[in-house]
Length: 601
Image (cartoon, rainbow, N blue to C red; front, top):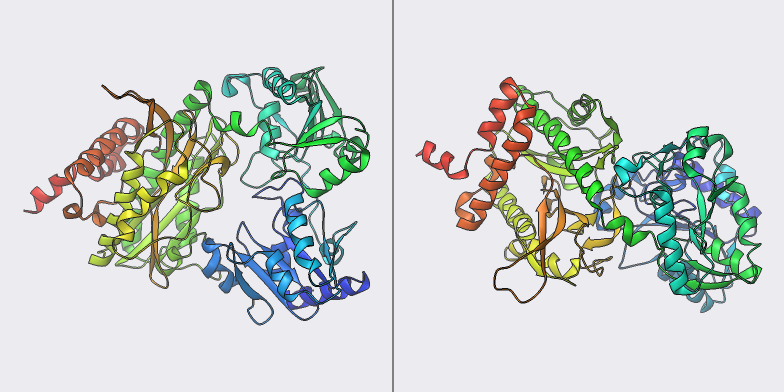
């Protein structure tokens, strides 16, 4: 079954056998993860779409794939428009589309282990107007037609030591128990993989690019817990680390355990727990209270130990990226260098630190027009040469045991056009506006988003993604609840200790893309004579901006001073880690901006 057309046909035949008139295929797993293991890549297998967010609906005579603005170009390149219609989220949801397209009186299937309770309620309501029914399946029909579907990872769990977490697992469980007491609840369900990894100070290798293990947990008001994970993933060191306060069960025992919680008051997160969890608990007679996973906020607010580890990771990662940028400055002008060769060399520089555990996501290595595809991933079919007088966008990061990194730089290969310099400088000015922002306690990320866009808006330009996302401590590179965005989040008040990205961009379809990204730490700011508690950002990422793309005439004195001070920090942090030609390159790349003007004059 080689072609995607054949797979779509096979799914329709399987649905007909099950007396279903449609089926919804989300890109997630039983934990509502953003990045999923190979076994859960049903959307990619069915459609060919390689992005990290999306969903599809298959009906007998039509099918649709749903993606957000990051993947508008990518989905058209990877998914056959003859068989799939392209739908934009959030303008059109799967539920809204079903309301228009589902057959009257039809039976639309869904996997209750892959959807939230809220989605089920919205889809059921949308279908009701057509007399159609939403039907939970016992087994996923995509799995039934996927002959070589990978098995879930069998990798062992590992201990994340207290010296890197700054707090023991027992202390974290005690805090959850205090939270439960305040809610008058007996237990909390933890189903998000990064929440479980953080709460139990364990890590795994079950999801590419994210060091988590497939597991579920119940944490109780007496600070004990039940952890559900495949037994062969546990060694004696992990068992000893977890201790007597954590009872161990096979992952398959999770649903039966939920069904045994009659009479208990259980806190469940409607955003992170799948519908099947709610159904099992309510069916058992448990009393449910819908609350955000109690790990989410403590995990987002890094302690001093986590911050110190992150800074150490950033320092070595900045040196690896600077070595790469120097290498690129030598190799790209020779001609023949392609996107995959470039990203492979960047990964090698990170690996040479001796401390790289994984990339934090698949590197976005986009030359020329491919840089305009926001979440582009190079392949042998799509890779381009880094051509003279073009732009190259590289968005990348590393997973180190002491921290997770994420950084984007846009590089001029040869001589950029005036338009490229204008667009880059507008993006840079927005990036600086976020970096330099000072704001009162209680400010939400959504209130800051306009700062990053203002100079693009002034020229009638914009970008179709958020400005910033949270980042974990050797965990997920995309972490909530904090965001800098006016859509899809951004309502969480920022707190000291939160780490976010600062990544405005500009994308000219068919020509080039620009993005500049550093990670930033929310910190308290004392303002002399001030009357309110204020906050600002400390920049954590250290790598030069692209001097050839900066139009200094568009910058004010404060912006120039900030860039010069930042570049001085880059020299101080990264410089001692470089030698020879790379060190000389860094000195030139981080020289005061107006020195270039003086030299040219």
